[in-house]
Length: 204
Ligand SMILES: N[C@@H](CCC(=O)N[C@@H](CS)C(=O)NCC(=O)O)C(=O)O
Image (cartoon, rainbow, N blue to C red; front, side, top):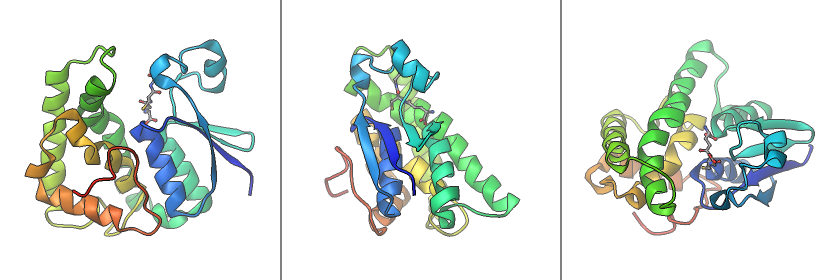
């Protein structure tokens, strides 16, 4: 197996998706800390690694993958296929949630949290929190009748949606009003290999 290097930032929920997935699947990762709050993704050297100028970026030997959803899909297909699905129907269901993580979870809970994490970011907090509340409501209603986001088992869909939802309180969002979401967070925390990131160490 080639060496896996993650260009990472400890407080980034998107990077945490990859650290968590690797921990749950016994994949060892070398971490390269990128000081994203100091603008380290915005220089030309970083753009040669990732023209999108964002972390996470995964290097699997010479192969480079950027975007947390893409990295989860790549790693699962290559090393842990039980987290994805072979059928077009199953993969389509997983992709629905990966897209939801990339748009709704990012615009809502991620941006609400970022407002408090980095006051220099120009974020419309009221809009982000409105979108964040919609995410929590939708997830609570979806998870009221099932344990996992899709396919009746944990998949990369759950890993992609998990971090910014579990960190919702850091964006001053009302996680405690959503019991089905809290129960799902608890189920993820119970999966073998789970380990937290800063902000997730406390009991629910
Ligand atoms: N769609 C991307 C978004 C990644 C992202 O938002 N990265 C942030 C850190 S969490 C970043 O690199 N921000 C620096 C910037 O945009 O300048 C993913 O899911 O990986």
